[in-house]
Amino acid sequence: MGTNTVQKEELMDIERAKDLIEENDFDFSEKNVVMHGLQILAKYEENIMPQFGHDIIWASNFDKTVIQMPEEEVVRMAKLGWVYDEENDCWAHY
Image (cartoon, rainbow, N blue to C red; front, top):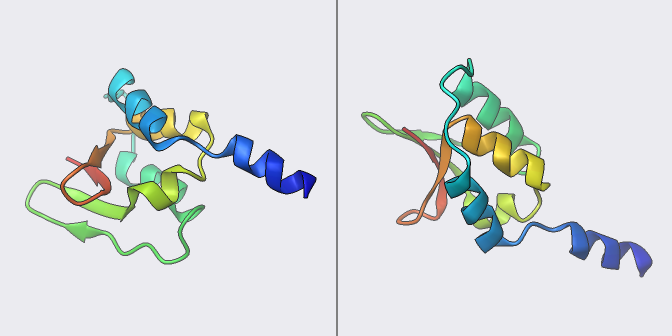
């Protein structure tokens, strides 16, 4: 029972995650930003199936993945240019 309490405390709050993404700008010096973001998402989702548009990539259900991430990884995703796509409730990269 004690481990469940610890796990709940470690879960990322969805609204906090959205704030962290807004507060942390894309670091244009980063390389391989799409690949690194997908690698992070692969830790939290067994079978990632990104979808590609003309100038956007969508991947993974935001709520399901972000609640599992530590704050540092949410910030890393933001610095890699990954954002919350409200319309599709997923991660997106433009």
